[in-house]
Image (cartoon, rainbow, N blue to C red; front, side):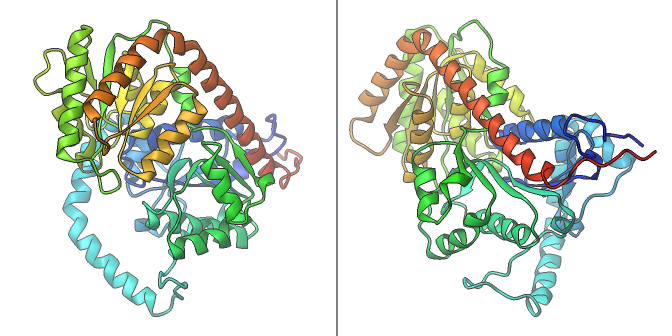
Length: 447
């Protein structure tokens, strides 16, 4: 058995178990996959012998995307996973092979699984105690054995995703009650206005040992209003910045990247979608650029359905990536662009971290906060265009033209901001490591 006790941390990392709350359990969002990549890699480098458990609904796909992590899934009692050769197979096969099999199995078993869950929850409800909102908290059993609980970076602590927000708060509260160190990294906090969610956040977030936020205005102010001590809050930028920054290349791109998301929290009208498509096609033609469709979210193919009509009929469209392409594949596609036009947050992160300016599209306060916060972290790199306001075609054309012309001059400054954020994020992780290492003094090696 490997002995990790002599590493530089001064602790036996093989005794550590880190439970990671994953903002997107189905692993269908490449922004979240980028954060998963960075989070798992950092923890593995620091504690090479630690078990890194990630909460997920897609255990095989998790193994394929993040071989160093192990799935913790409610379907298996939310305990730490079994070891053995079988569980290593997905990491060797990769997501392109594992993904279709995993997706097919879940589709075939969905109905009986939902029925079993309803029966189980009804039985559980007779003994479990609901909270003030009537919810019955569902806590993974793996938390009992955790040395550290981390809420991985993401934008789920918001009214837009109350289920995930409550679920994360439930886990953090249980960990705090068990005196297990807790941290939230790379968080996009808010908008947060729902009565029950605000009350829950006010009860739990002040107990979290460290909260790293990805922008410096709305998140810190909201946390202060919820009673979180400023000493526990640090601004780092998005953890996904590191992945894209590390993959940056020298030649400036020649194409225009496009991504539009139409969802319940991003209500884009058909008319606005038509205007966006018309503007990017016309401008790309005027500068001899190709169009690159960039797909972040594969949830119900939302980005594909919204983005592909924008490039339809244009003579030079770069090939679209596959359903189970990785976050790194998306970063590579972004690198071929000189400018991005996007209504999705993380593809903008991937661009800015490589020095590529962004025209951000918004129709909601949620995206105003996300893209506005990104603009604050990358001064001059984001021009926000409101899709619901009058004169969209003229305003969008002007914004794309401006960013195309400014791209060469903005490049080095944006990369410098990215480097600073990577350093800030890594410093925050040092504070996270200290939460554990200060509780685990070095023990003598016993052979």
